[in-house]
Image (cartoon, rainbow over all chains, first blue to last red):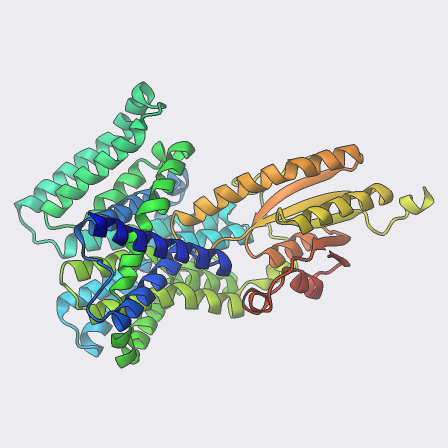
Amino acid sequence: MQNVWVLAAVWVGLALIATLIAIWFKISTALSEIVVGTVAQLVIGAFLAKVNLGARTEWISFLAGTGAIVLTFLAGAELDPTIFRAKWKEATLVGLVGFFGPFLGCTAIAHFVLHWGMRQSWLAGVALSTTSVAVVYAVMLELGFNVTDFGKAILAACFINDLGTVIALGLIFSPFTVRTVIFVVVSVVVFAVLPFLTPRFFKKYGGRVSELEAKYILLLLFAMGGLAAWAGSEAVLPAYIIGMVLAGTVGKDHILIRRLRTLTFGLLTPFYFIRAGSFVSVPALAAAPLIFVVLFFAKMISKVVGLLPTVYAFKYQRNETLYYTLMMSTGLTFGTISALFGLNHQIISEAQYSFLVATVIGSAVVPTMIANAFFMPRHLLHKEVQSKEPNPQLATSPN
Amino acid sequence: MVGRRHSVFKQILVGFDGSEQSRKAANTAISLAHCLDAKVLVLAVARPPEPATSVELEAVLDNAKEHFEAAFVPLRESAKNAEVEMETDIAVGHPAEQIIHRAEQSKMDLIVLGCRGTSTFHRWILGSVSEKVLRYAHCPVMVLR
């Protein structure tokens, strides 16, 4: 019993260190936690020989897995259904291109250039096909494009891109049996019923200290996650779609979302990202750095080649097209989830996992730096943004 | 009165982050506006983590909005007492760029900033907001220590 608390103290201590690093250097907590997990395992492994962080301990795996599921649900719930309904054609086209381009490109590179097996290559394709909704959204808020038609379409496209990633992750590696059919049928019924059932249930029984809403959401996520696992699929798949179908109801309940965020960031995701980082083998990365370089450029080039003409068709300024294409080449959260799925299901080795996570991190950091350094549409800083409306997220308050 | 009518500074932008120095800058700007019959725009900038990640970005923005709205309250009181017309706004992005952009867009005559003491390491890694604004702003910049 004592060891459980000592282990918990170590992990929460690492989470605290990661949070401080994120605050000091203004980086995302997820990135900080992955790096801290990697360094912690390296240091512990170096000085304490066979001792490790206990990342495969059952309760840590459970907390980490729950973190991934709830985080994915919250990510899906960020979708704005009205924007999606208005821009679904452009969003679907750009999103699918953004997914299939790197998915097929990275799979081909992994298989034919790096000589990975077929399943490993598919996994690499999935992990490197992601796009960060958050990065694109942050950039759009900065430039005021989140209120333009173009911006809304691109944001919705990012959701489609990630939906492609999650569906591919959930279906490519699952054995197609009767269980898969049952899972799909039950999922479709649940997704159809939830938007009607949930708000009525909350209205009748919610708004109490007992946090019925949070328990309901967790029950849904655990039950559908369990069904997905039973069918050989991945629990984050139903979690993301549940988030999307409830985006118009639960997603608008800021109090509930804040409580779930507190639970997620305060307890769950640190276990997830630190655990993900602890499996990264620095010696493996150091032994063959070229693999990381190949995968990194595979992702960047396949995204740019696929997205650039598509995005350009909707927008006229070259600089902005390049900027947004580079922004859509990032993808930290779902990339890590995909890579860890591959490791947990023994689809990829620890070394391959390390290369994929390093590429995912690199793809989150490097394009942002390049875009900001060379392609930031600075001309916008010298003239007014046309048709800029007040940002509805952040109000102007007159005295 | 003649000086007030022909004042060069009619619109003053204050970069605000809730720190003591930025509150000092805001109060200085309000005093200046009172003397010059100018308007004040207090601009706070919510800086997303880099790279921005799912869910965390929304959480950061929500927290920033709450934090800044609470910090604006005493400033509004000061402006009201000084009979100065003051607006507040919250932008998202890199603080220096947002301040410069807003100053240009809204044709500000003066930018007032607090100078936050940062270590050499932080200045090297993150840069100094006041230094960037000083370098790229289209109008005069006042930095208060």
